[in-house]
Length: 151
View 1 (cartoon, rainbow, N blue to C red):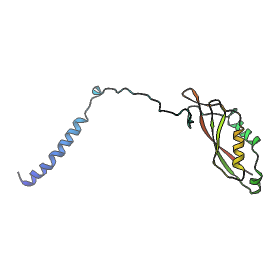
View 2: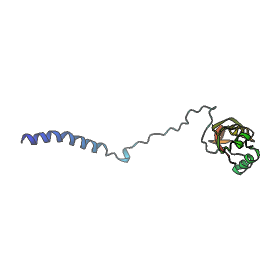
View 3: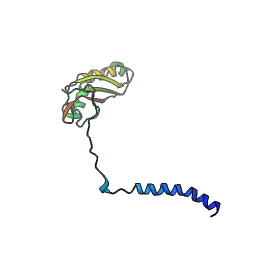
View 4: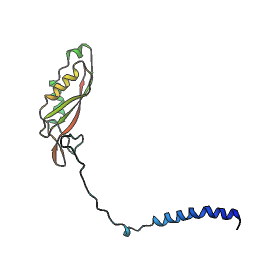
């Protein structure tokens, strides 16, 4: 054999060994597979931390249409906002408690000129909601709502 042929064989043999080993190790029959038992675990959850997504989201009594009527009736356009022709959306976040009560009301993004404070007042004054449920159990749920101001 020539030196060139020997050199090619020297480099080719390890490659062939890897190829054959890979091919052989990938040939597993379904009969050889042993099922691994699956363990279902719920993640550790702080009972005081509100959920953001649940199986059944909380709802305003009477639904979205009733909520729109409530806001239209209760929301007062702040005088300062009218004078400055301020329009826009105030995004409010709050927690619907397990009994439907509203807590932890805050503005996520506001437009100022008294609109943020008015949105908080209206949300804090809402009647109790139907609470959210997760795994069949009533839970605290953080909820975000937009409140639109338009002249």
